[in-house]
Image (cartoon, rainbow, N blue to C red; front, side, top):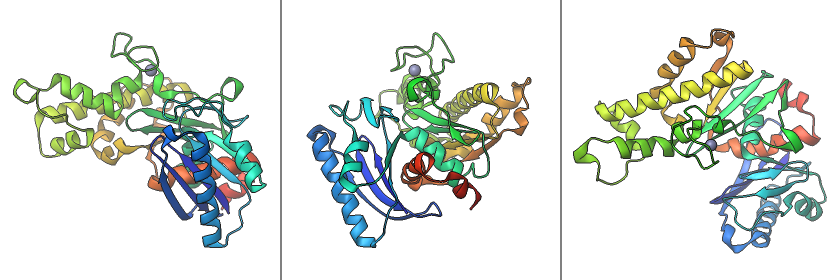
Length: 314
Ligand SMILES: [Zn+2]
């Protein structure tokens, strides 16, 4: 069994993942990042101890999946929007010292990509692109069964390829990135700005509500959903053109309404991509859902220190 830690801006989850990629037990606590890293570390340590004594389990190592920019080789955060003041801290060294075992940390997009490839919708495939669409767009790339890393172990940001150079401003400094056009928050922003007159000044409408309205036949919500499917399809067509993976696994909150977008997504992909065998790239929905991050953290450890071939063949 492997200890798993999922660190997000609002909550920290800790669990134990068994050799079949199942979360046997999990506990959660608010991150409270503003109270500082040492409080966060203490919380993680206590949760791990609690869960270990509760199950009587023996773990081989600890995997961490975390939000933000981090150096997976050194095991420390480099620039973390959602964890202010945690930059430069090294939970890999700290937990390793505390528990006397190996610890691996990956960005949560990469951890999710590993989880879906080894235990989820990409199982049995070796070229997988994982895309998560929520308030932002992130993900990870698996090539020949291994996590693709950029220079100095960096994590590529697939949500920030530019689709419309004169599009909306993005948090990364460019304009018209995929994320700025197709993330849930971007859909909500477009909806609020383009809503027909009488409804425009009402309370903000969430992406989930837009989808519900579209299901009831609301014409403007249907337009928003169609636009969302079009931009999701364009981004996926770009990824297919660049990587031609065996499968693209789609996860994240926005995919709870995937049935509303999938038709448009396939239409956009099949209207282009003619120089690659796009029909061979499967578009699949993430299989691991709420446990994906913890399973991802465990696979991050397994990818670094364990035997992944063992996991893939089980
Ligand atoms: Zn961007």
